[in-house]
Amino acid sequence: MVATKKYSIIDTETGALDRRIFVDEAIYREELEKIFGRAWQMIGHVSLVPNRNDFFHTYMGEDPVILTRDNNGQLHAFLNMCRHRGNRIVRADEGNSKNFMCTYHGWTFSNDGRLEHVPGVSEAYYDALAMDELSLIEAKVDTYAGIVFATWDHEAPSLEAYLGDARWYLDVSFNRRDGGTIAYGPQKWLEPCNWKTPVDNCSDNYHVPVTHLSSMLAKNKLIGTPRTTQQEMATSIDRRHLFVNGHSLTFAEVDEKTPRAGHGMTAANRHLFEAYQLDTLPEVERRLGSKRARGMQLNNHSLFPNGVLGFRLALPRGPLMTEFWHFAIVDKDAPEDIQGYLRWGLGGNNGVAGLFEQDDIDNWRQVSLSATSPLARKYSQWLSMGRGHTTDNHPEYVGHVSERYISESNQRNFYTRWEEFMNADSWADISIEPIAADYQGSATLNS
Ligand code: FES
Ligand SMILES: [Fe+2]
Image (cartoon, rainbow, N blue to C red; front, side, top):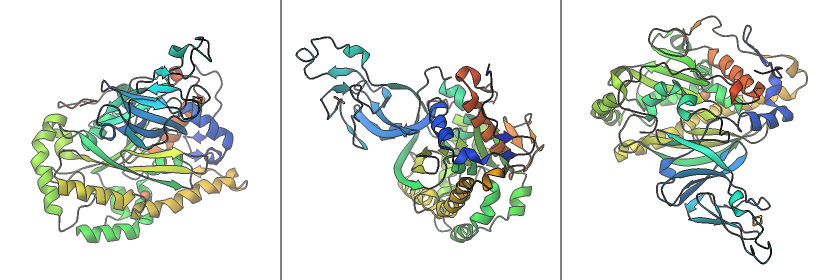
């Protein structure tokens, strides 16, 4: 058990949140260890390393990571650090190589992590170097629907347990087809905000009709659909906002004809999206069962700690800087034109030049920066919306389900989860909710 509770930053009764967590350098340094040193994080996608000996350079928090597929086809994630003096052994974003030679003194590691060659091992080291103890530092790796996750903590629960019943909802978007998905990207850019603000914003449906008014008007014009007002959003009964096992999710109940992935859809190409939805419905129903295949569409969501809207990353780069990585994930077997529209639409919404991204960023920057003022820090963020209006026993949906689509329940839970990680001495102090959803269909974690 945790002896003393170091952090108490959210009052779940009032929703008051301590702003120091967005700017304090010492808290940030501790986050890198207690959250990014422990949690499962998205680091890549199998389609980025499709062949033996492929590698892709990525990050876990601030730690540089080499994702490799070794000569036997096995995936690995290594800290990009030579075990001699600490030089980075990979300087490229991606490539294909059986070995990585450090360019300082020439130590050479195989792509399964072993230290294979040391110049002068006899002459200079007198054969006294324990090479088998100097492999690359390796993370634990697993995949969900082609997305590669890793954790530095070998005591962490399985990825399946970590995702928990968030997977029941995520499957609706990411686990639809037998052929899996493909990741395009990443676009990378810096946003001057704390990494937690964009993650919390992923299920802030409250801001959408205000922040994104002009973008929504443009988008509705393109698709030929009416705009959803804030009142409609707040009172709709077919949209859900829920938190499960650390992850924030929102989804809509839709009819079976509604295209599930609608980014890039316009009035002119809508028929192609509708045809794709209906053509693939039998396969999706076989994989996910009828409820999830016929009646649900995943909306905004985040995965704890820093997964933002699907396979997009909010990588911490100091308390007031976040490096965004944007990938477009699409069904691998989708027709080429659908893939093209989706890539265009996903980028147009939330890529580096995305309309919605640009709407959001100024809010995020100001929200983070407000905590730099000693006066402003005395006043909490106020996350009180929808208190007392969630249930843990929804008849159809697992998780902590809000009555309304617009709520701050997920934000309160996200900062409570943050507190739990930051107060824990090890994974033994971190809770995992049991898997309880009814997983109909043949889809599994890995296929
Ligand atoms: S630092 Fe890599 S070989 Fe010396
Ligand atoms: Fe937004």
